[in-house]
Image (cartoon, rainbow, N blue to C red; front, side, top):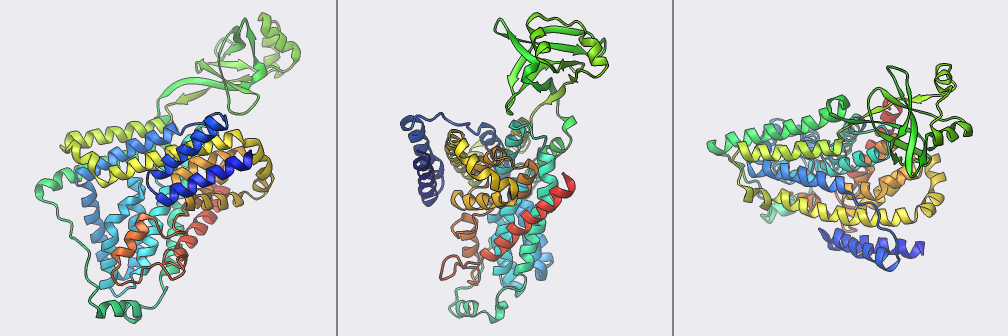
Length: 528
């Protein structure tokens, strides 16, 4: 049955990726329906937080676009690129990396690709060099952006599994790793191919009159400039706010206190869980009903509803556990004092990063609409909003299918792969890379496989190092930004080769991914 279900998942991914767009999610839902209704499997976890973060971030980015803020950013980027045209192979990927980092989506690269092509051509630089690595850099930055759907997926998975890792650790590793990996890709492309003036493809197109300019200069009126600047400031402030709340946990409000204890520390009495609690100030021990929720790791529970001065007594012996039925606390205080019994003191439960991102980005969209007088119709009809709808449907479908399959077959999957990936964690990055080629989505790859990585026993910090491996969809030259880059380069140097896979993006893509993952492993070893 396992192999039949596995084949079904692969077929859904194949046909969904082949059709593209929302089909990735809707066709995945066909497989989900078969697994649940025909094969009688339990539905897996739905990626609710990931979907909600995408919706809120896309709403904010759409408001920015509607207020002409994206046009202003393109104008700024154009000025940067034209200032140092000879360095465009290195400057262009930095610009697209930054655009994606602050916008949370690689689709913003569409706006600057024609500028890169024109500046490179006028500077006599083979456009293939900056165009290819710029597209790759915009993909790499997805795994460094604090507001991207892929990063949201990582945050949610780490939170659910109580890994102790979050946005701060992801940024600490992935920001330098992906930026450095992108620059390594630029270095690999800096002398790639013949110079433009000697390129036969370019000269042939030049003779045929096929080389012109695709750049439409971005113009903003005085009336549009003010709202556009304000929208950019609001959006950037929101992105910086997300980073700050992720890095400084203490800035997020405390919603309660909880202690994670061995399941033997509580016991059912008349169907209610009871435990011994200890007051830090008075030292008093109280036998009382406690609010218990199963922790993700087997054999542990979370005791919630505590306050900062109330801990839970750990039970050491079967005799102590029997006391939980009657509440006999005789002698326990003395044993705590001499170290024979331990007290687990509570930790603060704070507003989660998923909710924080959702609140900040949705509020940012509201401020842009309120202060910049944005037309609500423009917000929902722009290209960013349309791309967001596609992302939501695709990720919801493929992640739900993946979680259903893996949760119902976890024993087989973990039993087969755990020994290999625990001994050589980096091998899991190959699976991430391969699946991202099929899914065309970093966030969908994270949703489908990262939980499997944790279940396989991979140290979560290594999953951060391998996070950039989900940027594999350059392998097949069919993604939107790749096609756009080829079309914008009228010199013909950025192209798909005769054998399809020998295209302009293969070399910088592999260099950037391998470089980012390698640097990521080095950084987690040093920093985490």
